[in-house]
Length: 87
Ligand code: FES
View (spheres, rainbow, N blue to C red):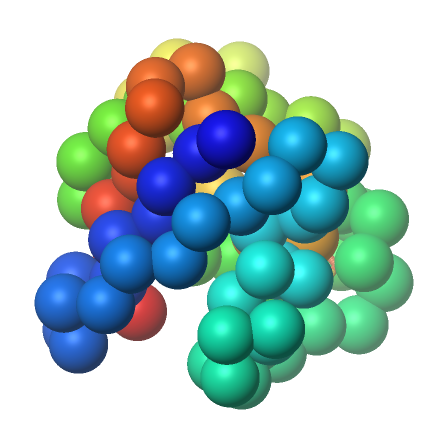
């Protein structure tokens, strides 16, 4: 499972396989703004401070994907065992 580190609080949230990062954060009591929850609206875009996101949204450009410093929490996962988010 993926571990997400919330940089502002220093909290860590485990994201079970089959669970979205957004769902795991909410289950842990964190508010996450969303609308489409399908990777198309951009409302859940979040800055990535460390780790490599695995983008599954329809929104980011090739360049943004390659840069890897933002991601959509509703659909995207990670290629690294941990992700540090600006939350
Ligand atoms: Fe729309 Fe995540 S909620 S892209």
